[in-house]
Every structure is written in structure tokens, then in C-alpha cells.
Image 1: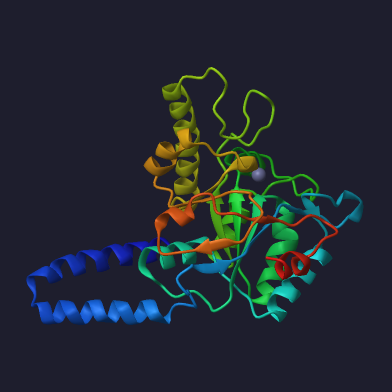
Image 2 (image 1 turned 135 degrees about the vertical axis):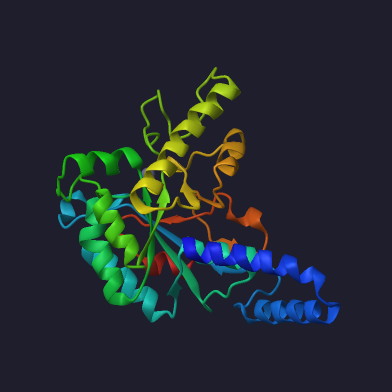
Length: 292
Ligand SMILES: [Zn+2]
């Protein structure tokens, strides 16, 4: 991802240098760009439909299943259905590349996302994805990754992934990691995701948010050598007040929780608050996608 972005920058610099060449050469480059754009999947002008599924924990004990917990069997059945319908999974970086530069997407793209970075994702989702040749995005809570790095615990009911486990999944190419804040994943009245507190000065709010999200980017850089380009809003809370902070940190895309189909266009604004379908236990990817 990092490398791709550097290459893209080099291409940009290269193109800038082209201005000194003849218009004929420039014209050829531009028409190649137009051909590349036509090769992207069917966008009839209204954008490309790209359903995004949202998972959280995957636990073997069906007694724990619920709104945000499903069993490994349910997850595997979802992947089988997705494959049977001809969908191809994409990462958030693929979507960003399409929006920014027209890099092609598959004919029938879908994105699988898992929030919070539970260790059970590594136990159950990661091997199932690998076997199916699929990929997914995991949004990580920094304080939890640090906690389980410092005090290893592999309990599938509550443990989160250590940075070692996250590094392993990312380096496989199967998983892309996103920020889910360093320590704002709370609903305790004091911290409600990234929501602004009542009576909190705008400047104070923005510096509190910046400090947390920048700390997380720093942890990513220290542990994985790069910072993610996507941020998943904890609990889906997003505010206009947070936008300048999100942009200043360099995030290109944010994930929300509104249950409708994401429509990708070539406009960067489509990457703000990408809608996702939660997948509770007892439903299925089939029932979601048949009506998406
Ligand atoms: Zn979350």
C-alpha cells in the first residue's frame, strides 16, 4: 500500500515534468488515461455499487452470538455465498485507488470489514479468508493492541490482537488495517466515540481528537512502518466538527455504520462515512446482499 502510494507520487512528479514535452506526447498520456478509466467496471454514470459488510467478533460458542458476534460457521457460509455470487473482495486501498486515479475495480466488488481487532478475527476470519482467496479490512483500537501486546492473552471471547498478530495478518496481503482510534472506543458518557462533549470548546475538542488519532497513527508507524489511510468511526459517531482533524491527519476514507449500499464515484467525497451493513447472528450475507 505504502509502496503503491509512493509509486503514484513518482508518477505524479513524472507527469508534472511532462509539461516540458510536446503536446503530442502529453495527449497520448491523457488518452491512455481515458482508456484505463473505460476499463473500470460498469459505472453507468451513477457510480459503482459496492456493498460493505460489517462484522465484529467471531466466537465458537453459539451461546455468545448476537448483534455483533457470529459463529465461525456463519462467517464461512457468508464467504461461500459471496464467492458463489461472483463477488470479488476489495480492500479500502483498492477503492481509494479507484477514486483517486481510476485504478480498475473487479466487476462485482464487495468489501468485508471487521471492527475492533479481536483476536478471534485472527482465529477464525483470517484463515477462512485465506482459504477462500478473499481479503478484508480490520479496524484496530490502539489501546487494546498495546494492552494485548504487553500482556498476551488468547481468550477468544474478549482478547484483542497484539501488534505481532496484526503485523502477520497485514504482511500476508489478506488483511488491511485501519484506525479505530487509539482510546476513544468508549460509550461511558465521558468518552462517546469521537463525539464532542456537551459544553466542550471546539478548539479543545479538536485538540483532544487530534491527540488521540495522531497517537494511533504513531503507533501504526512504529509497529508496522506506515500509518493507515482509513479511519472507522467508533460506533459510527461522526460530526462535521471532526472533519478538519480527520483531513489534517491525512485520512482519505472513513467508515460509518449506515446500513445501505456504498456507491463509489470518482469524487473523493464519496469516501466520507462509507455506509456498511452490520451482519448480526441469525441473518446472512445472502439476506443482506439479496436486498442490497
Ligand atoms: Zn468498534
